[in-house]
Image (cartoon, rainbow, N blue to C red):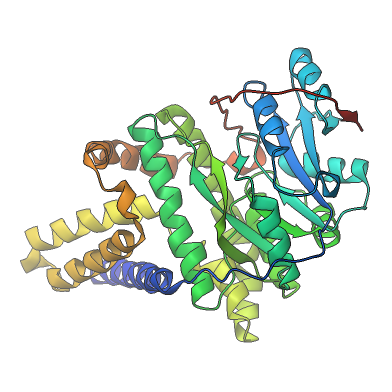
Length: 398
């Protein structure tokens, strides 16, 4: 009993202090806007679209509306399993379309084939999901950041929808992640975690690294580690915003989180030993991304389990080796880390109402821990449904 309690105390001490320190870092973050870069880099805006017929025409049309010279960027839609009617709409726009055909689709395969098709005449690769909408000055801000010397930049993904409690909580979760794992990490001198979209890289570096990858799920986790292995840190640009559709039903949420949790533990296992070796060599940044971040359970599970253990510790205080106030202190640190990360705009009656859904989500995520076998060997698609108006014009086929 003592050994189990000690293990739990050590784990939650680590989790609580890790989150709290980075959350305090998030409070210290300052947006340093770089000077305007006179050199306008040629950018490839790569948008993988697997069965995204409902949203991709509108997203492609929106991506064209950037306050950036039109001859200095190309919108490239990677069409995987799209319907003929959707392809017809895309071919009517001034964008590039790369049609891909795979027995087993993955985002890495799609991106690699697209870059092989469009060539090397680009300075930057910008990666979007098929539901992402860039703010009009997104590319200009990225250009300025690369002009300031950054080689890999993660933009800020904000929620595009909050149509129900599930979507609101999903958006809140991403906002907290931005604050802790990106804003806080960068403020403390570290490398931000990648989001999978709303990010930009030096084109040649990105193409070379991606060509050596065959990831199925969570490719952004491995990409981040390969960048760090080349001493390329990811900068977090809070002022460069992309709007991302949030999950609005529990079934899709469950599939998405299953993919995320599975990839997290897959890359923890794959890079655990290299991470320890890097730590012994003094490379704490790689160790943090490979081990310290991935060894944790998802935040909601940590908070739920910590709440349960704290209540049990008080109920069974006479039978425990550690004071229940130790558990209360860890719970408080964890809760403070989350409170620091929640913007004022989220505090409303809707949030209070949405919190009632948290126990159900906790239970579903806990059950997922026992259903991860083989999940990282199969591409799990998250469908999107919030289409926007399209404005077709001419298109170039690749």
